[in-house]
Image (cartoon, rainbow, N blue to C red; front, side, top):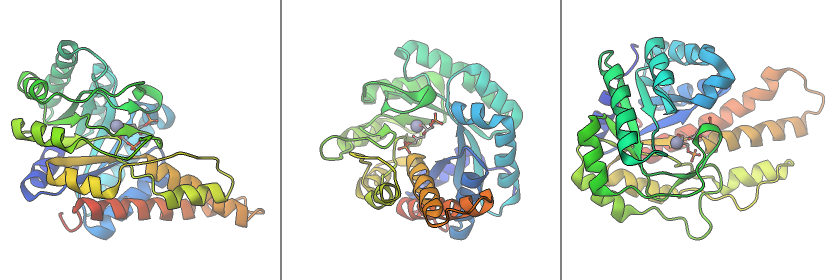
Length: 304
Ligand code: G3H
Ligand code: 13P
Ligand code: ZN
């Protein structure tokens, strides 16, 4: 199949009231898991890589993602997640990505808008979709770390989209990156989301949406991990957010947890194993199960 346009995937999702899952990859195993889950459930997906992922895997990782995306019978948008600069966004556009995010959320409003406009100009010429972010999520790794949460203001969001002509907007409504999202009761600010959706035409994106299933954390801990106090966004909250206008939902941490738990379990039970393919195959299956579950929660199964 040809590479899917991020904008088209999201406009269909918005019209039909579901959300497209956006899954981060850093290697062959995650890529295989994500793509095979999408095929099994006939779901459109975003296959996305952060700047950190591209540092780790080089553009060879992006080449792998593009090769899978073009080969499989479901629509796949290959996307730059949390693009830190115009330069990297341009490089991804040139390389053949169908969608890029420019993350100016750490900047003051005007500078974020100016940065976003530059990427929109570069992307539109190549029919590449652009996601931007207004408001700032707490937590994260590598290039996307922030010490505090700053909620998206609905009026500012409307102004931002008008100024930048961006195709989709990531909003900060209480979720955060990584495995430690909430201290107390996990809660998204759904009232704020409703207000943002009522003043915006573009599809909205939820970052930091991993659910951090206690069963995955327990499985990792059973085989030697030390992860305590981890808490994610409950699936019930994600379903509500999708009903209120979230059309793209990002998930990375849950795949990482599934990977770690499966590798630890395999090595514990097979101390003499030394073939990486044997060690990593259960991890592929575990990540695939996570992606399939998320696709069902978002209602994007069968939406090709
Ligand atoms: O939103 C952040 C993603 O989980 C990517 O994280 O920068 O460690 O690749 P990373
Ligand atoms: P999680 O850390 O909740 O998986 O969020 C991933 C993300 O937002 C990628 O952009
Ligand atoms: Zn994110």
